[in-house]
Length: 218
Length: 218
Image (cartoon, rainbow over all chains, first blue to last red; front, side):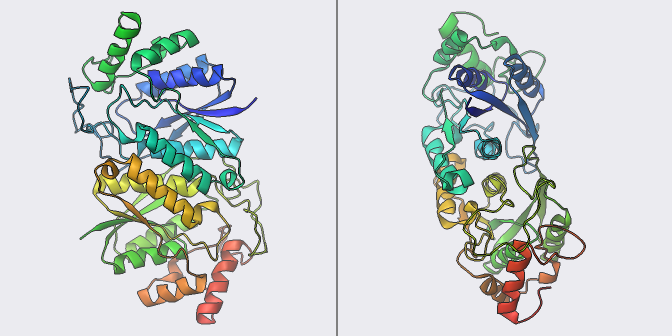
């Protein structure tokens, strides 16, 4: 059985990509980051998802002491009711987050002999982060080819982005078919008891469920 | 004063690149990794070097639980007296190490507004690691251009490799001119009280000092 690393944040996109990887026949190893995010709720959700999907997982703890993001620094407010079609990059952007996450995934993949890294990035219904777009992933593929032992030996480790060109509603429809337990996922940036309903992430989630199921997001 | 991030391992190459960056007029911020390496000696050396050069530094602690390298796993022996012109990649290779280190440097650089990342990689007198070669760094530059907010905004963060095409002797000659305190650096992979003198890193160091100064490596 071929192995795959899945970057698992606890959100709905990464949960869907986990089930997508399993449906494609991979033995999935999930990779979860404790990176100083505003709340630990999403880490708990990621672990619950990995357990539910019966896949082994690693939690990697990293520190980004320079912060530079509303998700790392509670002094910066998470924007509420921001226009979802705004063209700027919001303050929730974390400098180099996916560059960092993929670098650990590459290390993990090479160490256990996995050929693929799944990341649930999405460039349609998203917050405008540059490290979620197809040309970023194309550039990253080249780094893995040139910088890894396996790359030099001609055995490429691929980055697969199964959701990159789907709308949130399309992601959810696919996830429902795959049996993704969306009730275990968490999207809200703020991490209070209940989702705030106002941050980008809450609103993209609700918009997706509105369109996909005409129902309230779990 | 323009800012630069310098990846500082405590070895002679990174120490030289720190002094090179300062000589070029940058306000240097050093970045040190505690990544589960065999010994903490090199971290102490890195801190001593940063203090000596009067530059601020951050120590980032990361875990690579999957190991996959003699530098992370004491069950794997560090090769002794390996041919320095061997074409294979030795077991001291750490999967994705520079991919990971540069990803944190990129995050740090963007958060504090630095325009350059210095890395003391060397593709002449080295252990054959793929992530020390020019085409790897060229690929990485593209990732920073595509994946960072600053890249998208047209303000590129560059990766500078001042030692990439120098022999170890040339590096040391340059470092002596720059006033690098080589007695504070540590190269040996094993981290005993004294350098083992037999690992790749010890032998490349001694070879460099032999050629540059006809003297014993400090």
